Each structure stands twice: as C-alpha cells, then as structure tokens.
Amino acid sequence: MAAFQVGYIGAGFISTFHARALQYVRGIELGGVYSIKGSEELQAFAKKIGVGECTVQPSIAELCKNVDAVCIFAPNFARIEIMQAIVDAVKEGAELKGIIVEKPLGRTVAEGQILVDLAKEAGLPTAYFENQIHMKGINAAVQQLAPQQKSMGPITLCRSAEEHAGPHEPWFWDPTKQGGGVLSDMGCHSIAVAWHVLNPIGKPIDFLKPISISCDTALLKWGTKEGQKKLMEKMGVDYSKTPAEDFATGVVTFENPETGQRVKGQFTNSWMFDKQGLRLYMDGLGPGYAFELNTLQSALQIFIGDEAAEAVADAEIALEKSTATRGLLTVEPNEADLYGYTDEIIDACNAFKQGKDALLNFEYGLEITKLCQAGYMAAERGVTLNLTDPQVQEDLKTYQSLISQGRGAEVLHVM
Image (cartoon, rainbow, N blue to C red; front, side, top):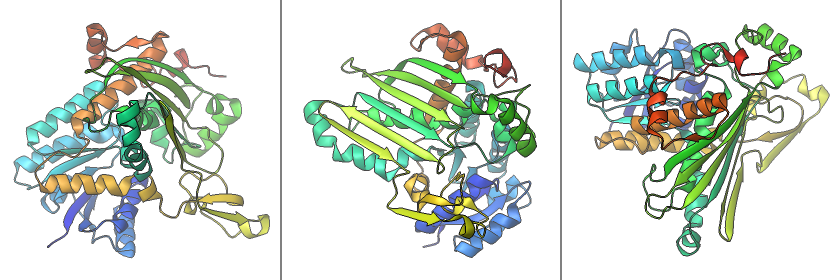
C-alpha cells in the first residue's frame, strides 16, 4: 500500500520538528513542500532522515495536487491567504483528503472563524495540531487513573505550564504579526491540555463547558533595558515601543453540564525560563489521587565541561530551546514523540483516510483561540471574565487585544 503523502506549507522550525516526528510513524511520508524560503533545506533534511522525497513545489496549488493532505506550518499572519489558496486548489480539482493547521488557529476569534468557514467551503476534514493533548505521558496518566476517577470522582484541578527562553524567529516576538505574546504562542497549549485532563473519562474532548477565565499578563525579563537591548540586537524587535507579554498566568473554570460540578485549569507560560531548555509541567489532582509530569526529568543526563564545550555549536541537540552547551544537561532522545507530535500526525492521517475530522478539528481550535483571547480580555479589564455572558461572547467575535494591536505599552509595564 502506498504511503500517505503530506505536504508542508512552510519550512521553518516547526516543519523540521514535524519532519523529525515522521521518522517514528509508519505509512506516512513527507511528499512535498512549498515555502517562500527554506524549501531546499527541508527537502535535504527529509531525504537525509528518510521520511520522504519532499518535492519542492512552485505553488500551493501544485503542492495540493501532489499530496494527500496539506499542513499549514507558515507564520500566523499568513494563515488566511494560505487557506484561501488551498480552497481554490480544491475547487480546481486537487483531491486532498484533509487540511492540518498548527496552533494557534487564528490570531483572533474572527480570523479563526474565517479558517473554519473556508474549510467548510472546501468540504474537507480538518485537524488542529495541538501536540500536548497527544502526549503519551498525559494520556497514560489519565488512563492509569481511570478506575480512581470512576470510583472517587474526576480530576478537579489541573495545572499546566510551558516555559522556555523565547521563540526562534523575529516574527514570533512581534505581537502585531504573531497575535500577542506568550499567551497567544503557548497559552493555547496549556489551556487545551488542562481542559483535556479535566474532562471525565469517556467524554468528548469539549465536554466540560468553560464558564469563566481570569488572567494576568506581564512583561518581565524582556521589558528590562538589558532585555530590550538583547531583543533588538538579536531579533530586530523594539519592546520599548511595541512590547508583548513574556509571562502569563490564569485560571479557567469549567462546569460539568450533567452534574454541575466545577473544576479548575490553571495555566502558566513564559519566555523567560533560562534553565536547561523547554519545560512542560503538568499535574492533576483528584480526590485521593494525583499525577505529575515534568519533561525535564529525563532518564538521560550529560555533563560537558568548559573546555569540551568549545566544540559544541548547537545547544538544541540536547533539548528544544536549550540555553547552555556545558554543565549538567538534560537530554531527551526523542522529543518529537515525548511532546505528542508523532501521535497527532497518526491521529490526523488515519482520520483523513476514513474521511473524518481528527480528534481535534478546526472547530475545536476555534474554541481554544476564543479562550486565549478571553484571557487577554480578562487581563485588560482586570476582571474574572464570565464566559456564559452573551455580551462577552459577542464581544469576543470582534475583539483584538491591545498587545496584538501594537499598543502593549498601555497594559504592560515598560521600563
């Protein structure tokens, strides 16, 4: 049987990471790529690791004609234009089986809604890539505790955090292009995985209903004079004029529509975690039981002294977003699988083969976008936002945070 061919739109960091994940997936290959830059490099990498031919295509239309599913891995500000090009290709005869988009679905609720509507216009199954819900560790914990949930009751508090020292690309730091700061970039992960963990066993992914959200956004490390200077020199972004938050934390309250029980999902995200590298930390607390997951607690550690460190050029060999090349280093031999990338690819492609949406579809992605934007709204207003208020839901449809408008100095403390 021929391998299922996926095509990437975009050839940056996330595309390379997903290509690495394909090494551990059977029956799925990287068939092609279209990108303004980096296509040849991604093609060479794909061939080197043996995940497919990754033919460089001259347009989105040509890519759509030569693969089974397309993955939108391009920057947030280009999503709508790309999605429209995919829809046009389908109308012109491209026989796609599905469309994948990397988080976040949109920079605003309005943008996310446009992507949902365009996917319906194309008449194709969709997948919203939120890798942390697919983490083996998270799902093993939930399944292991299933008997306890059934006898004692569901998890009532989930705390989820994602932190590292900051993004790779300049556009990620620009709130007008990215859609905000760390809340937009990583809060979507933490809110989604908390919702997933809190859902009672056997219920749909969106069973619990969000009823309120509180949030605090702050500019800490990258708002200092030294932080601003480094960011300008390295990324060309001026946080003295158009800052974004580098720290966000908050709580989403969910309600069980059958029992009325309320549970809490706490999220914490930062671009100022100057330790080994990317850290995902989640825990869940139920009546009489608990679990905890920390991706920096690896079975493998390596020590590199100062003299030997001079030979090391790429700290990220050890761990995504690594900030050091010497000392005691945490090493994760298979980050792509650890973080859930392999399982989300398998889930999406298997669903597409059956003509179905993935576990997480565009409509789910829209709900996560709505919760992130509600977080910004709550922070701006300085209130716990009532998500059951019809006026709040109406306001979210057209809401754009001050930070994403480039007006972050009005709500963040800038030195």
